Image (tube, rainbow, N blue to C red; front, side):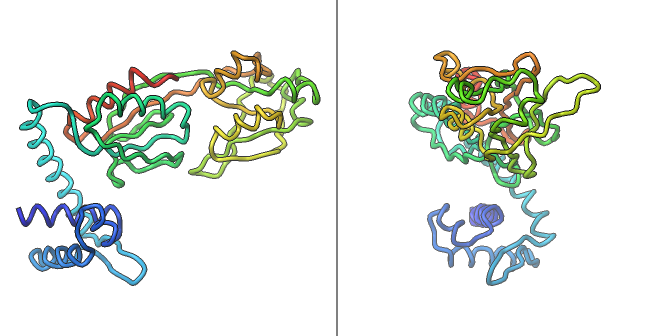
Length: 294
């Protein structure tokens, strides 16, 4: 059991790159973590971390050891789960990452928390491309298919993407009849967090027609901001339909150039294939699949 405790501390340090943060997560002091790592290194006869005053990084031996240790902890979790399955409802900490789309995500998480009060959600709201395995997530929700053999995914749903503007903006600036008209309009653009590149507005154009150069009136790396600004008469923006569903139904926003755009966005929930599907993860996957209103 002492070895298992040392393995757990090693994995936490490897994932947080901090003795202090690892200690906080484990409920022990940073010095206790440091001593545990030193004992493990002495026992193995190798150095697991490169340490400096500013950072902690894994050695080559540490990276190899980390992969095996994660498997060991997964097996321990699987064994504990098998023994406790019959004892009651799913429980424990569930670490997930979701896009910064609180209007889409939070109603589902709120309902999940009410139905499974013994599961502690640790949520990372971020549009960045996280490394599920390296960062220790149980599951993530993202757009786009995954092609990593270490991961399993389930499709949550798809919806159209639409170009929208408010009636107030269109009354003042006119309704564009063709994508080329957009050069005279205020365009609210989305920037991909991972690359810093602006998202294209995917117009269907003739072979001889050039793609319009969109004037960037406003740029954001999260799309909820763009929908808000469109409602404030600030310009046109290209967003998933679920984000502006209520505004479209009420007439606060309207679709523009709908005949020139035909694109959908698909959401997936993704989790490590090597991880034992604990009850807490299984019920989360099932609940989100049934209740995320895309």
